[in-house]
Structure formats: C-alpha cells, structure tokens
Image (cartoon, rainbow, N blue to C red):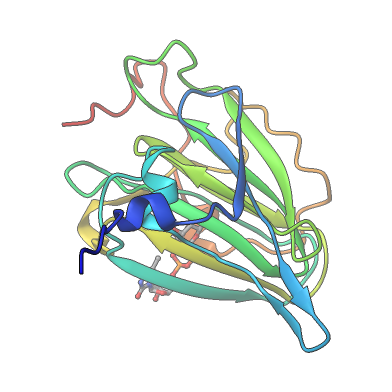
Amino acid sequence: MCFRYRSLRDDIVSRFNVTDLPLAGLKKVERQLLGDERGFLSRVFCSIQLSKCGWHKPIAQINHTYTAKKGTVRGLHFQHPPFSEIKLVSCLKGKVWDLAVDLRADSPTFLHWHAEMLSHENSSALLIPQGFAHGFQTLTDDVELLYCHSAAYAPKAEAGINVLEPRLAINWPLHISECSARDQAFPFLDDEYSGVVLK
Ligand SMILES: Cc1cn([C@H]2C[C@H](O)[C@@H](COP(=O)(O)OP(=O)(O)O[C@H]3O[C@@H](C)C(=O)[C@@H](O)[C@H]3O)O2)c(=O)[nH]c1=O
C-alpha cells in the first residue's frame, strides 16, 4: 500500500484575514471565529500562516495584560537590537486604540504612526514588525490584551518614547486618565534622533 503525504503546510487552513497597513510590514490580522452552540474557537497565532506575513521567528514569550480604566495609555515601548521584537497584539476583552510608530532609521515612513481599533468584538490584532514602538489607549474599562513576542523581555534593552512627543503629534482619542510614572518619564526625541538600525 502506498501513502502520499502532503506537507502540513498544505493542510493548514487559514483562519486569518490579513490586511497591509500604510507602514511597510505592519498588518491587521482579523481572526475568523469558528462558532457553534457551545461558543467559539479562535486561532490567535499560527506560525505557518503568519510566516507569510513577516513573522519569521519562534515565539519567545506570551504576555497577558489587564488594564482597569478607560482612557489609560501604555507606551510607547520597544526594545533595542539585538532584542528587537515582532509583536502580535490581540485584544481579548474590551476595546483599545492600538498604535505602532515606525522607528526604522532607513524607512521612508520614519516617525510615522498608524493606529487601529482592536476589540474582542472585531477579533483583530496588530502584527508589528521589528523597529517599531508600540502603545495603546483603552477605550473601555476592563481591557485584556494578549501579546506574542518574538524576543524575550530584556530590561536593559527596553526603551520608550513619551506618549506626548510633539514630533509624533498623536491625537489620543480620549483624555489620558492614567499613565504610569515610568511612561510619563520617557524622554522626548531630540532633533538628532535618527531611529533604530536593525541588525
Ligand atoms: C514588558 C514586561 C514587563 N515586565 C515587568 C516589568 C514591570 O515590573 C511590570 C510591568 O511592566 P510595564 O509597566 O512595562 O508593562 P506594560 O506597560 O504593560 O508594558 C507593555 O506595554 C505595551 C505598550 C507593549 O508594547 C508591551 O510590549 C509591554 O512593553 O512587568 C516583565 O516582567 N516582563 C515583560 O515582558
């Protein structure tokens, strides 16, 4: 008897609708829910599918955050090379205005930013390539985010840009109700800031 095996790659059914966003490499990933009378199943991450969208490393860490209050801002965070990360940010509860800032030194969209509404209702995530800073504002109370990271947390490589940075002129949708002391202390960019060079 002869069996013919197809590769697993051919058998993986896509459960994502992926859209290119205006900054190269930044993508919106909409999950397709498979529902029945019990509830639903939603694929949050798939290395085979997302490798076609720029996720070319193993997952190093998965973090879950809870933010209590509407209007809270967290960000704008990134890690310096060689600890630059790809992040997949999914909102599992509530609603956020999720934002990525292009810090790539050689990018034609250097210091441009793009935001998307993520919520448990729209089942969307933001796939953020290396060389971006990330932040968000909660648009509801009781928000839960799930982050997949391609690099481990490296406190010495952590960095941030102030969420009120004038050169970014981010129009946060709500009054900022909460922002950590650490985030408020992040510096503003100086005129010489030339961005992140990825190795
Ligand atoms: C990010 C991170 C923090 N921590 C610790 C440090 C601190 O004691 C506590 C809370 O950290 P933070 O205040 O940095 O948490 P938070 O502000 O939620 O940090 C997150 O913000 C968003 C915008 C991102 O993009 C994420 O990658 C991450 O940087 O958790 C870890 O142990 N591992 C981690 O991966």
